[in-house]
Image 1 (spheres, rainbow, N blue to C red):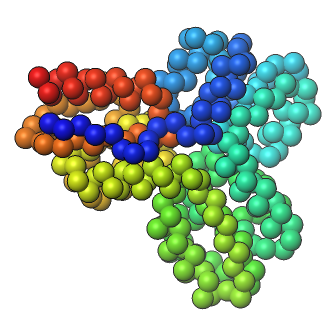
Image 2: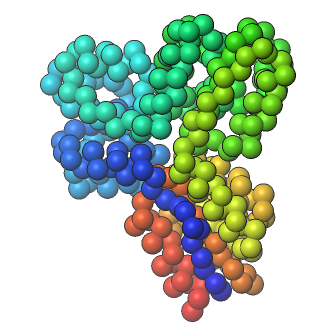
Length: 277
């Protein structure tokens, strides 16, 4: 069986940056999971004594708090600073951008619409920067009974599919006098999605590696499954079922932006060892 990795996959710039920041700040704690990959978080705790705290109020004056790649709500960040916590901000610059846009456009009088998952930590943070509030939707259908003003500013979660974002853009533009559209989907997301789309068109089995709660990995899996029915989302080699590969000729592999190289290599080695005997 032929095995091929996607042209682009795995750690993005923001995740690499956050991991480096965490490794340089031993004996600290991240506020919320630094990235959406439990295996890498466990490695940071074991090798670099980087802990995990789910409640920002537990940080005391002088404690070192590493802010996760997805960012946190503005009021929580301000609270950490005002309480004398040593804040190390590992928020991805691609996430900081929609935060800034929401604040600036909200203050300029635009109604803010955010395309994304309202319960995702990135969106919770981004929404908090809209001074006069924001509406979060995952499709245009959710706007059908919502009364919006004439001036709209639109941003997207950094890991969403561009096709879905364009559907929302095309819904809003004919209905409002002014729609400011900001492309806040990050380059790594575009590249990884294009690569998995290309690979899954040719593969007869696809493996997409990443955390089960990773939004960008879920998007990659969705794209893969639309072209290759036998697509599987796994977290590591322990999730592999080798019956998936029976009578298959071409296995494609991709991985989410929070998936470290060592996990990808373990999956690759396990497939080669157990399938290509």
